[in-house]
Structures are given as C-alpha cells and as structure tokens.
Length: 358
Length: 126
Image (cartoon, rainbow over all chains, first blue to last red; front, side):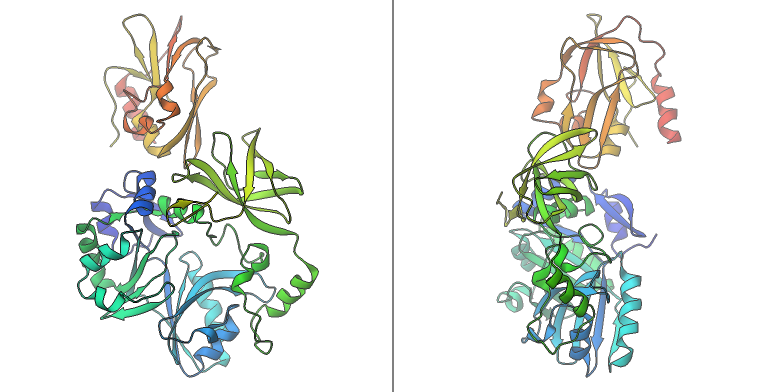
C-alpha cells in the first residue's frame, strides 16, 4: 500500500489503519463518532495527502480547462478563486469531480480524487495534447484539511503569519502563505481550510495543529460528515455512467457561453432535452437501524437504490443519499435485511454549519 | 491487542458468558468483536421471557460500519435485557465486559464453551 508522509503520525496517534484505494489511511483514532462531533462542534483535521494535485501551466491553460471540464473557469477572475466541477467523458458521464483554482492566467491547479488519480491523469494528459500546456502531477505536495467552527482560529494559532494573509479569504478562494497554499474549502459542511503544503513541512504543521487542540480525524468520520452535509462521493452518487443531471450536479455545469465546446456537452444537451428519469435525494430513517449502500428504496414513483447509506451522529439517525425516480417525495420504504423500514425523502443537505436542517 | 477476561467463558462467535451467583448467566460480546465493528449506534435485544434456541441469532448489534448477529450459546430463557443500551449503545464499545452486557438468561445446559485461553487462540487465528 502507498503511505502518505504523515503515516507515522497516524500510527503514533493510535490510528486504526485500513486500505483505502491502495493507500494505508486511518479509519479512526478510537471513535469515528467522537471525531464527527469534534468537527461539527470544534476543530478536526484529516490527512488528505492521498488526493492528487495537478498543476496546469502554459498559455493555453484557460482554453484547455474550458474544454476539459463542465464548469467554466473563465468566470474565475481573481487570483486564488476556485470552483467545483465534474470532468465528463464524451457520453456525459462523470470521470471525476474536482476543484479547480485560478492562480494566474497561465497557471491553474486541480485537486482530484485519490481513487481516480491514474484514470484522471491519463485522461488529462491525452486531452491536453492539442493544447499549449504542461501537466504536472505534484507528488511533492501533502494536504491537510482542518475543519470546524474553530478550525480557522486554531490554524492561525498553529501557523504564525497566516492570520494577516488569510483574514479576508472568502470561501472557495485560496492564497499562498510562503510555501503553504491555503484554501477556504472543505468536504464537511463546516468552515475551515484545506492546506496544500510541501511534504517535508507536513509533519511539523500537523504537530503544531495537534498542539492547538485540533483533533485528528479519520476516513470514517470524513464519510459521515460529508454525508450529513449532503455532499456526493465519487463512486457512490456518480460514476462514469452517471451524468451530472442525474446526481444533482446540474448546477456545476455552465452552459452560459453557447460557443464554449467542452467534453460531454452534446451528450448533456440531448439528455437535458430528453429529460432524466432519476435524481439523487436524501433519506432519513424513522425507525432504528442503519441504511446501507445498494439497498432497495420503494417510493410513490417507483423503485430506487441507496447510493450512500450511513448514520449521522449529529442527527442521531440513519441517513442516506439515494438515486430515486424523479418526483419521488414523502414517505418511502427501504428493504433492510429482509424487513421494510420506513424513511422520509428530504432534500439534502441534512446539516449545515452545525445546524440540523431536516 | 484485545482484552480477554479470565473470569468468564467464550464462544467461537465472539460472545462471552459469565456465571452469576444466583444461577443465571450474563452474556455480551467480546472486546475483539466490538473493536472490529466500531462505534455502536443501535442494539436490538430480545424481550424478557423469550425462549431462544441454541445457535439462533437473538440480538443484533449495529455499528456505523455493519450489523452483526449475536448468537445464543444454548437453549435459553431471557430473564433481563440491558435497557441502558437503548440510549447508550456506545457502552458496548467502552465497557463490553461490564456496563455493556446484553442479556441475562437461564439455561439448563450451556454445553461446550471456550476457556479464555482457547478464545485467545481463536482471536489469534483471525
């Protein structure tokens, strides 16, 4: 298995190590439920160095990205501004979801998923052949996500010099502080930073954050946090065979510039005119129990399937995202271990900034 | 390194059984089992008075990760269930041998149970 530069830290902190897409990562450091509460109520951090940072440089960087991804980087006008986008294949299916940062006219940065790194890099490289760009997979960089209502203030305490530069940083924007690239982004529904930094600085930075009381959190809590924040996970809500229109990501597709050609545009336009039959909705279980992936859902409009099922420590109930027939609403039944359990269909997110919305 | 107590007996399916002075038995799941399952969120227990046959699944412990059956070591009659687990399922993680007990029961013949050394071997071989 691959190991990140923080591997020894995880083991020292009592991390329960598991194989995640070929990487040895901490599932939790004792209790994933406590870690979840810590992020919602205070500050927790995740080693996300297994994710892939790709720098795109060259005169045609903007043209290339306007072709490569479904959201339009042209609308990023101030340096450090970012957007969330899907990268599509010719049939309109999602190859990956990613964040793209505009750093300069000839320099953009993409952050893509760990599990799809090889597939993404091959695709990006192939698609870049016709453009005047260089593609650089930054294997020298690590990434730490610090999340929670106290994440930013604790980061300022842990890393001197960041407060002055970051205090005006808006959400979905990034700025460099020396060799640290600090983005006000996250995958938990809480405020916080995702810090991209040289591998050789990662252990020291991690330890400084621990000293200010930021709790190390593993992949178990990362999944329950993103789920109750209503965020999609590549491989669950979407994959190569699912278009953004079928997984509530239409908002990430920018069709404003009629002249912009991007990969998958034609397929999406015909899907749009035909109409899609399924969308992704939220489910909250009324009974005791836990909804699991792939369980059958029976709604007032027909059958669907759970795409991500788990338990929300914040709500104290089991929740899920599910692909359901369009217009499904109200109560539904979920087939759980040969029993039918009752659930309510809701619009995600379930929780935002610590508040339960459903 | 999971904790195994020497004051009780075990099953291959990771339950522990302890003899009580009043002739009843108490049952729970082992440290090895709770560690594998992770944070518990629900525990489904039988009712007091239920008659259960040997080897049948008579409780379910459900963690964020998975649901797992708990099996009766022998034919038994449930006398009492741990009501605290309704509001505090996490007791099964934090105190699997004490406050996280699942049921108290009466049984005519417990049959063959594992000693704590035998159970250590079961755990080591997994």
